[in-house]
Length: 242
Image (cartoon, rainbow, N blue to C red; front, side, top):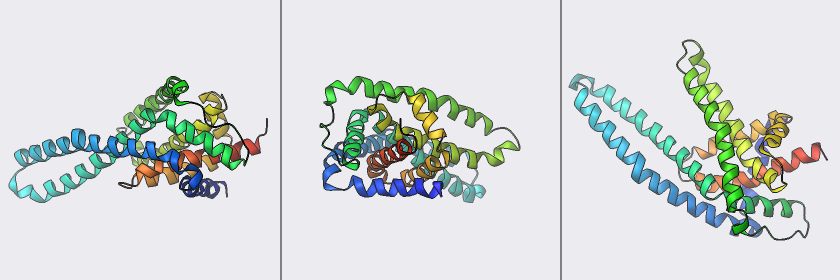
């Protein structure tokens, strides 16, 4: 099944990312992830959680204490997930050149060839960050559209499923694109190729989305997803040889 194949590619990426050949490429992105989450937690999540807790205590009557507890739990979970999402976004933007190198090393390793070493970071910083901004221009309007649809009566009942499905698609586009960029392909071409293997891409994206939501594991998930995304891109290339 293509859906299961996509999930298997992510698991293979996780295993390969920890191999001696690639381990040195994941150190910097993982470190950036730890720092990004720490700053997000200290500067965003904790202050917002404290302000929300204070507001609930001031505005809810005592007899609704049970509701306050439930709301606080929901707030903490939501802010925690938002914090992990924000830190992941920061990592993919700041660590883009390192992630591109990881994808290039993965491609060379998976092809068992004696390719040249990954390109110098200084020569790829500008293009890598520009590519991430291009992805954001694709992601953000569609996420805003889903957010607006969440308020439409009736349709909002199906929004959790739509949110999760689109999140899986974004994860596939995000992490398969590093290998595509290394091959000098456009982001539009990445989307076209993934659309031709949509079930496989969604299977991969579902696994990434699930694991990115696990606290403290997402620092390793991002490099592993880059490796898995490269394997996904390789499998699509094998189906559609140029």
